[in-house]
Length: 367
Image: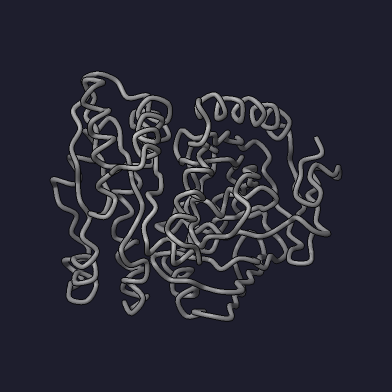
């Protein structure tokens, strides 16, 4: 019997996050294990009058590709995929896996090259999302593997996932509209800022956001949500930050990451686990060592780290910086095939100052 929260989530995604319309071409993508949510979204989209279709990802095929593909095969982007990326009106990405570690033994340099070669495709998708010609949202479906990664039972993880999205409320959309309103108030202040200084036991980092746009994240591109972000001036970062949570990317987990910046660029990186992978990703292309995003998490209902960036970057009392590609709608100009969010806890002995004034202290905005 289907969990009623699945259908409820599908309705929120279709009507609030995507605002799907009659006649729109709508792609739903996820692994086989996420099929209950894919079908619930397909049903709701059909009722709207859209044209939905489902693509099922096969992790075993991706593993085989990384093992055996030659350079020409890795460079090749199917014309069907290119056409699709230009034609779809809406995209729902559903995350959830039977094995979160299936790429653990893949050569990290080969993995980095693959991401690099797919940059033109990702550029098209990011551009369309930025200019609103493509509506996109990504969400999580709770699986045993993801629950195990988060060190929870499946039932506890289901409560965690659906609770973070407020599926326990009679009207989740009402909650997310309230979040949007409060974050809009913050953004009006943040858009006037030039210089930012992050200070904590794990960071002493300065950067500029002058002229860049802060973005209000309240459930329309990630679900659940809860953050405000911008794209820093590319050559402005000076100092260091140590990420207090493991950094997870491409199925790999890197622990105790410390990055040192000069003139915006990572000039030294260290990690207690998987440092080679970290370095290979940062060497992916010339933009990978620069910051593409600076953000502050505002979802205080997410109370524990789950090794899933969808939730972890939203934790109230944290900030995250992404090395690599800027999100175009923020005004950021950094170009890279990488976009790797890494999370730092700011709940204790920490503050953020803006143009010399404290705006954030020990995990909470003071403005």
